[in-house]
Length: 498
Ligand SMILES: Nc1ncnc2c1ncn2[C@@H]1O[C@H](COP(=O)(O)OP(=O)(O)OP(=O)(O)O)[C@@H](O)[C@H]1O
Ligand SMILES: [Mg+2]
Image 1 (cartoon, rainbow, N blue to C red):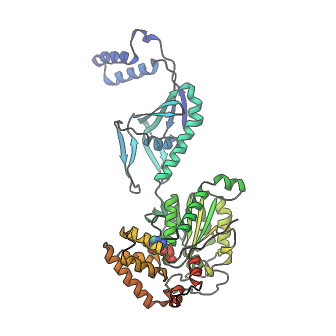
Image 2: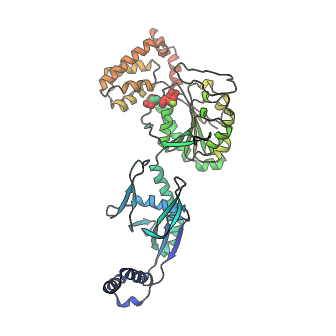
Image 3: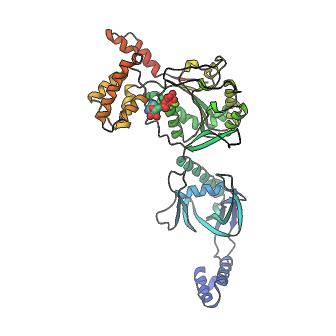
């Protein structure tokens, strides 16, 4: 930590004849102005400042931007923390926005002062920005490039000497912690995908872009009970650092999302990432050729992240599926396309994820998705592997209400189309993706809902499989229990506890 602590030297007593140091300096300055060149004036004034500062009980901590060639975490934290303390009367500020930033960054300009108050201690921060006599080399932490800097920036933190211990032992850690929270709140979630390192190299690396997926738990149409359980599980996971350490387990959580195409598995992953502000690493296994590449990639994933492997039943060659298998779910999804010359197996991948990888980082979430849970390798389903199995199913009337409100801002549940749609949805297998697409076709709610009614009627005619058992049984008006079975399965959430 590049924090240096310095007491201000005792002042001289020769100021007795003057009301204050500043009055004395002004007098000297007036005299010098008439007699000597500017550089000499500055030199003399600096010397006077240095030797004749008034007696004070103040102490100063200097927080420089750099510690040698590297950055100083205390400086960055102070900068982040103090930006939340900017008063409206501050005179000079710097603003900037890099391409990847969502909002404008605000920083201090030369010599701005900010007062702060912590646990009974009054403090003053001052930002200082000086020309260096010699340029110096520093490392840009975003890119690892060496840069030449001609400026020196630092903060000075002034307070009463008697509070030195409280400031160092309690206030500085508080600033570091606050800055971490502020950064997490403002964090832009990234999506990391695989890319070739360079044209002459066969190795693959992570490439990242901002995650622009707007899905949140509020926009997801799914069983409210399941949604609540997932949110509670995520909240519990992120606050249980101590628990995981105490029981000797890696701080990770695994979710298996299964269900038909278009029911929101990928949207749920984006909602989790947006909710926790965790980056996503989308591991497309068909692009990974060697076991060693896979390990390298996994070890290069960051903390507080989600490792996603989509269509796990199709991307890893399973022991029981030899030969060029071509599993198909009838919707054009889930086609197995993994070449057989790949050298790793599902159990190799799982062992590495459970073992070395998860012990090398903190707050890791792993999500596997599949359209066919029953085709999964038992190794994936065994207790202890995926903590929660989440069934994403067809749209329910409640889910439709949510889509109508988010897509059309429409809430009139007594509208005739609304009731007809709810009734049809109750009795058919229609995905949220299909309904969402219909609702997007017009801004006019009447037109969009009318279009959806036609779509559902057509679907019922063309695809009799879409009609649920209840609809078939409804002919005699008797409840034979089948409906309950279907609905119970729709809201199934299997929490695998260990
Ligand atoms: N449960 C849902 N709530 C809200 N919108 C949904 C839901 N499911 C799907 N959608 C809409 O349909 C689109 C496709 O959904 P998504 O990609 O999440 O489905 P999926 O289950 O991952 O499908 P696949 O199995 O084909 O990968 C989404 O962009 C979203 O607009
Ligand atoms: Mg998907």
